[in-house]
Each structure stands twice: as C-alpha cells, then as structure tokens.
Image 1 (tube, rainbow, N blue to C red):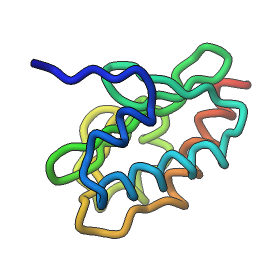
Image 2: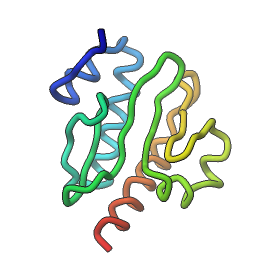
Image 3: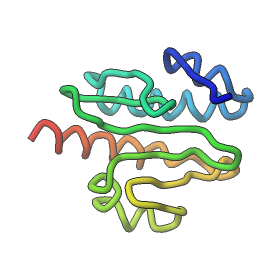
Image 4: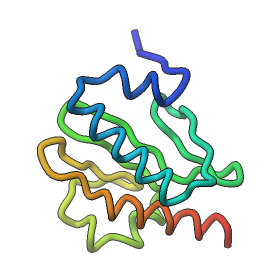
Length: 117
C-alpha cells in the first residue's frame, strides 16, 4: 500500500532521523529562498507553489533525494547539476554526499523569478 501524507511534517517524520535532517535542511532552504511560497503535498511529496504555480518539489528515496524544479529550473543550472544523476526536470542528490543547499536555494529563487515574470 502506498503511504499518503497530509502535510510536509508527516512526510519528513516518516523517514529515518538522518534523512529527516536532510529533508528539513532542504525545506528550510526553500522557505528562506522563497518565503512567500505555499507548502503542501503533491505527487506524494513536499511541494511548493507560488501564485498557484509549481515552484519545486523534493522527495526521499532509498539512496538519494530527488529534486524537481521543472525542466527550465534544471536547464538553467545544467553545469552545476552535471555532477548529479538527472532526468527531465529531476536531479538526484545522493544521501551519502553533502546536500547542495546553496544550489537548491538558487534554483528555487530562479523558479520564483520565472513565475513572477
């Protein structure tokens, strides 16, 4: 049965403590980068919207944290993201490597600028 979450706190609490720490760091980074973003759950993971439009999403997996900023958010930062495994509109940050929080904040701010423009 697939796990469902009502809010981001429930989502984060579902994972082991070491993963919770990483998820909370990402959450705080996004909230600081775009304080007016609305937090919720979409596609079963933490999601942030701005003016009703998707900003970024993130989710924990067995060996990585997936970060989703739509294809435009990833293409703008393709050089910085090139060291990570990627898909169209997604990137995988390994759990055993330092989380690129500054980059996550930059991507969130870029996406906010796109939405507001």
